[in-house]
Image 1 (cartoon, rainbow, N blue to C red):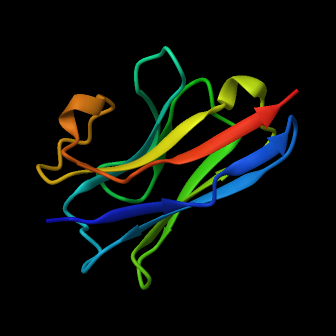
Image 2 (image 1 turned 90 degrees about the vertical axis):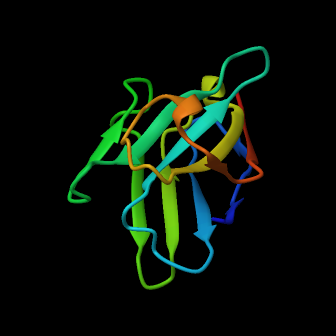
Length: 124
């Protein structure tokens, strides 16, 4: 079983920044798809960012491209999401996710490991 724990959420003004962390237990899980999703009230859980199949690149939803950056520290088994130029529409619960089948998907239902979520609230 993979354990994922998010942290770093909070309240920030529009235009500000936050850095989310996702700590994974045990191993780096290099064969797993690792990514970030978010869910706002009344909306479906949506893809935010992930690493590419090769691990040498990153992929982002159009809504966050140019503002968010996903990275990882393999030695610490931590994945990060740096969020800059935050907008009120970024307000959501942010989730770290992993797919043990390594499908490299942007679909939430194809991920089978999830953190508990961390709330990000952006005020206008």
